[in-house]
Image 1 (cartoon, helix red, strand yellow):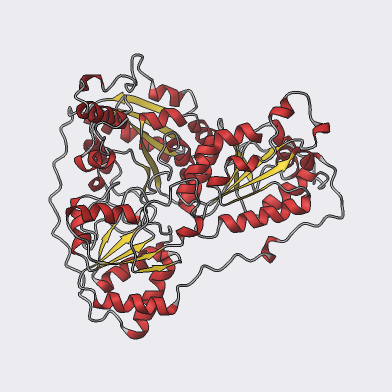
Image 2 (spheres, rainbow, N blue to C red):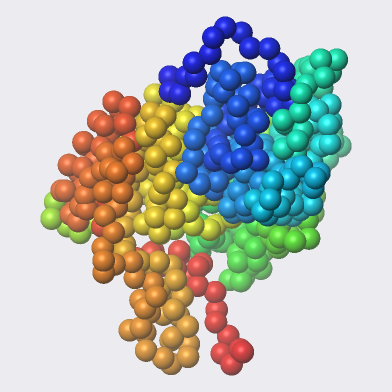
Amino acid sequence: MDVEKPVIDGPVEMQWGSDYLAEVIRRLDLPFLAINPGASLRGLHDSLVNYLGNENPQMLLCLHEDHAVSIAHGYAKVTGKPMGAVVHSNVGLMHASMGIFNAWCDRAPMIVIGATGPVDAAERRPWIDWIHTSRDQGGLVRDFTKWDDQPGSLAAAAEAMIRGSLIANTAPRGPVYLCFDVSLQEARLDPSIKLPEPGRFAPPAPPYPDPASVRRLADALAQARSPVLLAGRVSRSEESWQRRIELAERLGARVLTDLKQPAAFPTDHPLHPVAPAFFMGDEGGALLRDADLVLSLDWLDLGGTLKVASQAGPLEARVVHCSPDQYSHKGWSMDYQALPPLDQHLLCEPDMLVDALLALDAKEQCFDGRARPPAAAPERPPSPPPAGDAEITLHTLSHALRRATEGMGVSLLRTPLGWPGNAWHFRHPLDFLGKDGGAGLGSGPGMSVGAALALRGTGRLPLAVIGDGDYMMGVSAIWTAARYRIPLLFVVANNTAYFNDELHQEKVARTRSRPTENKAIGQHIGDPDIDIAGIARCQGAVGYGPVSTVAELAQALERGIADVRSGRVCVIDARVVPGYDSLMAKGLLREVKEGRH
């Protein structure tokens, strides 16, 4: 991205505290820093531009701190590595906090850099420095970061950055926050201070599962008649993807995946009999009830999944969980989910366990007696294309997208809540990137920009299908993609409503015998109508729509894909008929208790 190259006359000496900080950041191998600038960071900002030349790392200007963090989050979902996000003082950190919470819940590595002060009250400017200085700024996000620090010297700051990088990159991964006093940045550099060598601080090797535990599990798998694998939080490694397939085929085990997590197993494989979904449905529940061994590969909310599956009958399988996640469990957030009943728990990453099981099998042929995988189911005849004048639903939208991208490598960066799990097959670890972790709104545009940034040069088409509510909350992240020439296609599934909440209002009204006709009050996004495509165009992107029929959508997609292939950002406003499938609606609508006050 040959954008924002500073004018610098010759080499620049390291003279200031912030020059030192910038040099350490460079040595952490962070290629980009997504930044929303502010005066607390003016020293570091100058050093990134005029000392480092705005390269390695390159700054990406964002119009909101939440976008900066979301872009770093999306980048990590593709690469598995942290990117830097830079936010100003306490106010910027508060803006960024939702995005940091998303990264925490999603176990995404990230290094968030902030500033405060001057901590020395005698050095503060009247008014503004006082309201932008906090005594314990990291406390704002401490409950949903892995670690934070506010070092008091440059030597301590170098150590904090290296430590933070190691912690963010160690499973279970997550965001860390580093806060630098303004005075530290703007002090003259003592020439005797030495720069650290991050290579001398080796990252920890991923823990390998206990051999006795692997043996015990392998024996149980060899005896199981109907094992089921729950493929959850796993890496984007193609090698590990193939190893999971190999293990499932050696075991003849059925595999389940879900839509909250990125692609973990090919969804058209004969051992993957149930379409992925946000919530466990009847078919998946039946598989779990029929299983005699369930192996969870860091499945998100294993306890809740087993509870739902057991509501229609007893679940008697031996349950084994492979996950290091409890190392990140804290008391403030309930993101650790329900406590699952377990017969065995291995505190390591799933890829390591899969490798250990296959290595043992290769040595001893543990699974030779296992049933071979079933033959592939006969291909279903393709469903007839919808009529050109048909209204757009999420099903017809997915059909149109499949036709428009046939033969292309597509990364589906985001889908809206009502997305049908059988709409799109995933055959590669980058085919689908899952949700945001915290299940709020507004992260979709920023995370999509970050993912598209990481995908540049791969030949894959970055495609984000997001709802209009999510789009409007995070829409100014699109400017960053346009500014830095990050190709990306957005299709906004625009139902002109906060439809999820309409369903809740209808549910409550029915329970209380009140009129359901009022469900859209305070929910409908219209009158005046929002120009979704126009908002994209005014930020430098291409915008099409609104389109309301399948034929109009097909034309817009053809043009939009061509735009993205030429390096542009494109947004298509697709007016969809509101609606979820029954499984999605059932999962979202918790029971409303009568008489509860």
